[in-house]
Image (cartoon, rainbow, N blue to C red):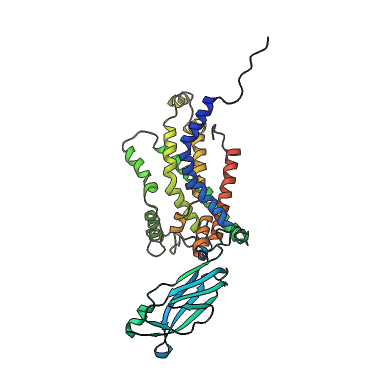
Amino acid sequence: MSSATPPTGTGALAKREARLAWTLLAPTIISVSLVVILPLLAIIWISFKPFTLSDLRPPAPIVRESLRGSGDDLRIEYRLRNSSQEFAIDGVTLSDVLPDGVIAGEVAAPCILDGQDLFCDFGALEGGQRERIRIPVEFDGDPDAFEELAEASEPRLTGSGPSVLTNFEFSLENFARVFDGDEFWGVLGVTLFYTVFGTIGALVMGLFAALLLNKSFKGQGFIRGLYLFPYVAPVIAVAFTWVTLFDPFSGSANALLVQMGLSSEPINFFGERPLALIMVTVFEIWRYFPLSFLFILARMQSIDSSMYEAADMDGASPFQKFWLLSIPQLLGILSVLFLLRFIWTFNKFDDIFLLTGGNAGTRTLTVNVYEQAFAVSNIGAGAAVAVVILMCLIAFSFVFFRFISREEGL
């Protein structure tokens, strides 16, 4: 007897279910593509182009019309120029209609005048090239209204040039500029210091805050709300408060240190190396430990209390209960928080920019993106730094999931 063979392939019902699933997922996939994937691809595209703020608009001809001279030397001038200093514009033409009552004299090449219709064919304009067209004119009418009448019609221009953003010419110039010299590695070191110590510090501080508030006592709700203040307060407000508090001339912290004899002179907390980097890291810890505190406290309150009761009966010390019972139960949430906080801190820009502006040894990669793209107006170099940040975070995520995280499902 032959054994029964199970059916192979996909049945009609399974295909229908697959189509339904993709239909339901389509809005989410499209939204993610528009919000995340397309901007990411655009940044990667720009990073391989020598792209500056001046290249946001493609090269185009620009003209200015004006009435010059007086009496017998009266003339209409058209000043034409290429908006780009590097790229040529092809097919440049200018056309305009002279107002009624204007009698034009001889027009030089490359322009022709047909009645009141002016047409000029310049062909190609090289980068930075300028042209000037002078048309001697006479006016049969009120001289005071002549200037306004002569400039009433807008000249029409044609011409197109290559766009650095959309062409298919790529270069590693931006990345060579990013990795040139020791500056990049110094910035990377500052970023890693700020990220690692800021992340670990926020986790440790959140862990101890959760331990303190894991017990019921009078005023517990108020204290919990107070702990959340650094996280929910506007960043610009708390950053300005810290800068004012630690100001070397009028700050309360310096006044207290000097009066107590702990310092002989005011300390510039946000203006000296390496103190400024330590201060912005402390600010990072203080501002974001409430997030870790909330997650850790929620996980602590879900742990079965019978384990601690059994440990008490066995004579375990508080440290032993914390290390042998609490920590193993918290490893999952701690690993997730470490991953999220590392990524968020690595990408942090506003805190450092508000506190120091990236000065005094606090320049991180995200501040470098801003300086390259907007302070130096080199968007391509800024995009290249952003791609470097992306590569660093991808490498960290790979190492995290491959070697660090042991939680099932991560």
